[in-house]
Length: 83
Image 1 (cartoon, rainbow, N blue to C red):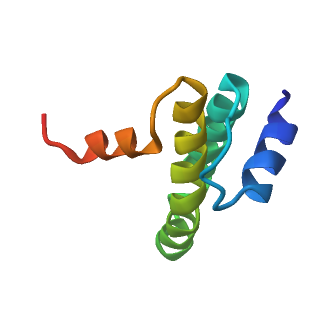
Image 2 (tube, rainbow, N blue to C red):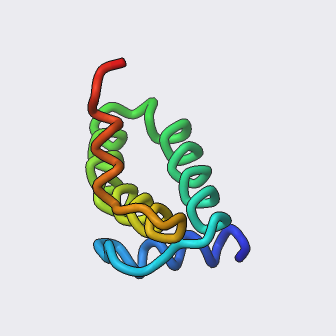
């Protein structure tokens, strides 16, 4: 899966927490959000709006990737635990 296909797939499955996501889809999505964050993060209002808009697809692609590895999407809650 190439970069643009991965981004289109994640936006088309905006809030779809079922199914599976390939490794390339997951990592291209995270690369996309990182680049968008670097570029638009300098503008306070737009940066906040974009980051809020990308919360649900980030969780969705993370859950689908965890399903591909045989785990539940609820494993993402471990990110909230303090180390």
